[in-house]
Structures are given as C-alpha cells and as structure tokens.
Image 1 (tube, rainbow, N blue to C red):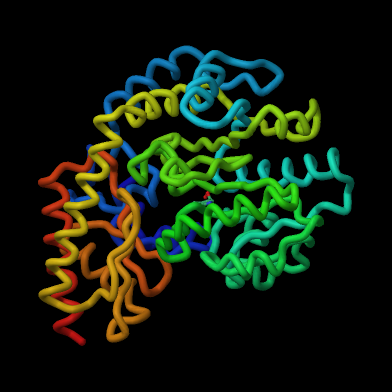
Image 2 (tube, rainbow, N blue to C red):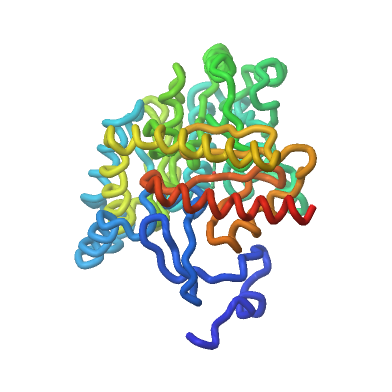
Length: 403
Ligand SMILES: *Cc1c(COP(=O)(O)O)cnc(C)c1O
C-alpha cells in the first residue's frame, strides 16, 4: 500500500469530492491517527455518524460475532437481527412499522414514495404534491435532491421529478400559502443540519402539524442527522409536542455501518403492499446487528443526559473563544449538533477555519460556507472536548491573525 497517497485519489476517483490531504488510518473513541501517525481529536464524527466514536467495543463485538454467523440473505428471508432492531425502534418511538434501507437518502426515497402511494390509495392520484423547505437536505438521489431545498444540488440534473414545492423554513405563512388538499406530504428536518444548524420555533413545528392535519397530508420528519441521541433525546421530535407520520433515520443509527430506516404507523405502512418497494441489502443481518448494539448504548439515560452536559461544555468554550477573537455571530443548535455562525467579518470563510483547525490537530465540519459545525461522538470525553477546542482556538487565532 506504500505507493498509495492522496495524489492517488485524483488519478483514480471521480472528482466529486475534495478530501483533505491527510489520510486517516485508525481511530479509537474520539481520537484518530493518520497514515503518518499524527493524532487528531474528532469533533466531526464522520458527519454525525460515529455517535459512539471509533471502534466502540460494543460495535466491534456485534460486527465480529455477526460476521461469523450470517451476512446476507436478501429479503426473500427475514432475519433475527432485523426483527430485533425493528422491535427496539418501535418500542422507543411513535412507530408501529419499520422499513430498512442502507442510507439516509434511501430511507427518504422510501418515505416520499410511501407518502405518494398512501395518498393515491386513500385520496386519489391528484393528491401528489410534496412540500419541503429551502435549505433542507434529504439525500442525493434525484428524488431526494429535488425535495431538498438547495438549487446547487439539482443544477444540471434536470428534468427533475415534479410535484415538489418549497416553503421557507420556520415561516408558517409561507407553508400556508402552498399547502392544499393536493398536498400528500410535508417533509422537514426538525433541525436543519446541512442548511446551517437551524432550530425552528416550537410554534412553527406545531403549526406544520396542524396544517398537515387540516389537509390530510402526512408529516415526514427527516431525522437522518438529528436522530439517535444527537440532540439529547433519542429523536429530536421528542423535544416537541409533535409526532410525525413518517420518520427517517440513518447516519448514527449504524454508528459507522451503512444502514437507514423509515419508521411509520400501521395505517400508513399498509400502502407498501408486497412488491411496491424493496432493497437488496436493506435489513441485512450484519448492519442490523451493529445498529442494534449502537441502539442499546445510546438509548440509555446516562448517554442521553450526557449529551446535554457536553452541549454546555461546547457552548461555554466556544463563547470563550468568541470573547477573545470575535468571530462568531451566534452559537446555536441542540445537544451535540452545534453550529457556530461566522460574523460579517469572516463570512464565507468556514473552510479556512476548518483547515486551520485540522492543522492544529482537530476535525470539525461546515454547514454551508458561514457555519462551523460540530457533531462529535455522544461519548466524547471532557478532556477530548478541551483538546479539540484548544486546537480550534489556535486555528481561529491563525485565521484572525492572517486577516
Ligand atoms: C446526511 C443526510 C441525508 C442523506 O443521508 P445519506 O446516508 O448520505 O444518503 C438525508 N437527510 C439528512 C437530514 C441528512 O443529514
């Protein structure tokens, strides 16, 4: 492997990504090491995926023991790990039925197809409009980018699927102006992740539910990023008075193993009769065994309450950095989904801060060009938070000093 380097990427890979120069080689908890042996603190969590950090013993044990039993059978058969995971998700949420996929985008694809099918079965084919929100993100398949609210992800891929409208997030009047009896579903993230870590008002979320009920539209919550303990509850909807009809979950569900799921009620699930939808790998025993182990660790009072304490620690430290360097206009978010929005002076420079922090030994994310995003392991230690944010502070000092 010694002839493999970052340059190899440019010669062998389709150029749709621009990965960092350093190549991570191994990880443990919230620490990772690159191929040159340098150590980093991971505050990115593989984009809100590695909820238990890297190589958590419960995950290693689950994948190893399942790997020695059974990996794949297809959905011609069912399997114990899938049924056990589905039962856990049902016991812990509003859901009564589960469909397994392999990613967030696929879970959403299933959700949007189910919403259309349910409306068609119950109200006729005229009821087919999906309303979602600007700046929303729901995946990269053609249907899910079209429902997503960022034009840059659909440009050049036209013609796009029809029957999709976009409202302004956290603005009930804008939804009111679009919703009608032709609406089959309203799709939203209970916290917009990629769109900049936007936490909506409680009244907005309640109002969306009421409008859906008035028009017999299903409410779909995309919890691919906000779910599985990320906000301090198992799912973000649990912070609100609102229950969705369909919920999608992925990312942290597998803790690093690719899996997604769509959760719904008996009533809605009925429209996916045999043959209407499917997936070769969805619900495979290997993925479900890992997710089951992840679920057991996350869905405990210790871990969920710990998220809140860690949130406070991040917020305090980020405020302290801001007092010293005056770079953020706001630090926002819920639990361990935190956004630090850059102020006017540093607008558009999130990437510079991210790169400078990486040089100082810590990983973080962006949520658009103006927001630094933190989505670390839910188990990140106090010491790791301090080390990670000390690296951020040095990165900030460098960017500020050079400006
Ligand atoms: C990441 C993400 C997706 C897409 O998930 P993939 O696993 O990349 O397909 C969908 N919705 C939200 C809210 C996300 O954050």
